Image (tube, rainbow, N blue to C red; front, side, top):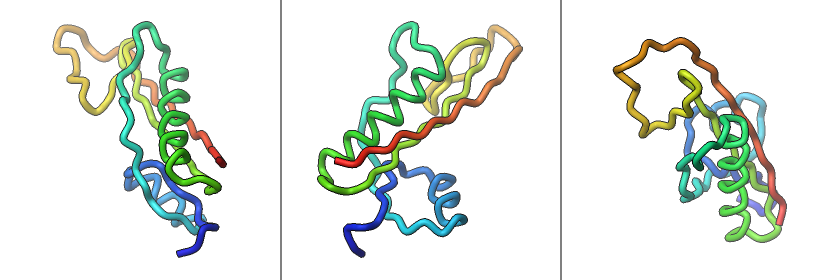
Length: 107
């Protein structure tokens, strides 16, 4: 392993698979950041902030390395759903939208 490897700041098996499919040389270092949506935060803003926070956290401990942070958000009935958000039982799913974003850091 050399310092030229990209660091994937995510433990997502799908993101790992995508990078492997396109032949990118990378290492995985998941970020430990709070992924709670902020009050009133829209899905695209949330996904962008979460990806940036992940990339920034890993870049801070890996100076000079290229870091890729990513996040995928699901919006259901105009509500951001995370892995820890239980589905609402009171209303049917009217709208399901998936937002994904990437953010790179090189510190």
